[in-house]
Image 1 (cartoon, one colour):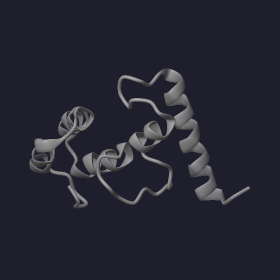
Image 2 (image 1 turned 30 degrees about the horizontal axis):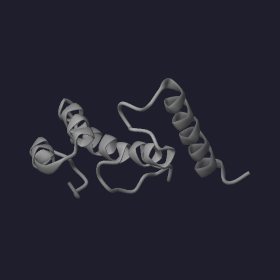
Image 3 (image 1 turned 90 degrees about the vertical axis):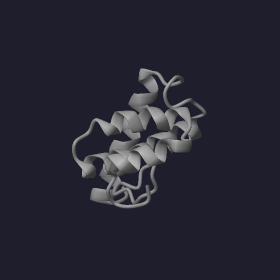
Image 4 (image 1 turned 45 degrees about the vertical axis):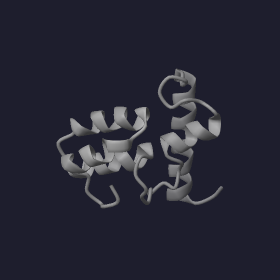
Length: 98
């Protein structure tokens, strides 16, 4: 899954030895029509390496840093904190440090 596009055949190949969270994400991504959309979500979630424009941590990296499981351990509070972190990073990148 190292390319810039994430076709359905690449999703199937990636799932061969994936962990349960990756299986869940890959199944969700398979329903997306656009390869670009699948690739962007995969980067943002953190199942594929890639440059993230905001330089904010991926969802999986953030959850690991918080010590919570990315599917079963998160609450609405975790999601809100991650969203706030993303907003701060986007503001910092677009406006510079304050």
